[in-house]
Length: 459
Image 1 (cartoon, rainbow, N blue to C red):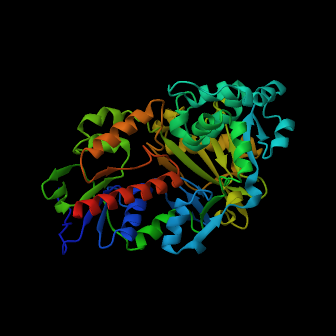
Image 2: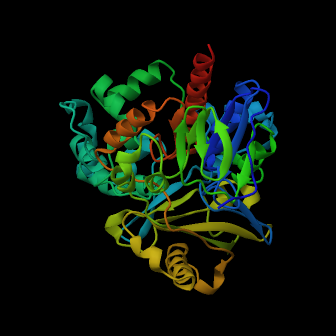
């Protein structure tokens, strides 16, 4: 199939193709466009709009997110891109009043302690569960190199209750994942490193506090939502975006890389598509990895926003431990986090369904999703369902990649395979972290690798 787009060699300038227009692909293309002089960069995205799961929509005064709601300001790479864009005035930190986070325990909302001393008076764990956590500094660190799940790590260092009521909902909120399957080292590498380096998480916290280590930062978004970051990168003229073009095949020939829809050669190619898409493509060096790539799970997710009368939902929101056996994962009090998400009369509350424990969401109809979301939310907010007005629904059949134990082996294979084909690079949230900061960090790293390759190639 021809698209009418033809790439032409221009005056000896280097040409780079980026396949995939999500945050990973766009971020890499933007950084390369600013750091590689004279580079002609084309981004090919099979969907008609860029951004992947990141997008923001307005409806009757509400500003809704289809995917991530923000990023933590404690890590520098996303902020660095904003600095490069010279758009610092678009940043929107979360409201300081939104620190109140809750979980559901035995059907009731329980506030999570935000300070160490409050932990001892909270009802999040029993007295025995709290004592078990206090033993953490005296638990020997893990020996051997066997990859362990987050649940195995948690039970070993913190106890069963901490896994059930703290780690499980946290993992559900971040990955929509299952603590009994996800790899600690792949999902939370910093926690794994802290245990290996200090022998204890408590000891690590004490040491790092004494060194005045940087905090994780504050949740941050943009005045017009996370979709604004995508729009600003596309508008920055650092690359050319070609939406609605799906690349199925990449070939390496003597004069460079050739794409199935495009005539002409590229000096380098960056692959920034989901793992399941990589598995379906014809790519030099990656032919033997189709089964590994296809094995990375992508459970479904549904995001259902509601308009709620002001004053009913306060704080950040709540998450639900899997032991509670509920139909939803939790809810974000979106306009409590970022006040401009709601209206003068109503707050925006966003309910999340799906994840690795709820694949049935993939087969549900829209009306059923809204029905389940409103029934659960009304119960927790203690209001009548008629008081909740559904104002949208966004569904992803394949949402967040899951890093099961052994995931690092797939990453190693992908890196080894792409390194065997000079000029071919692989990135994306299937390999280097699912958060916005993870993707932008990878963007800087891949951009540097491409720059080094082109520099060495030209010498």
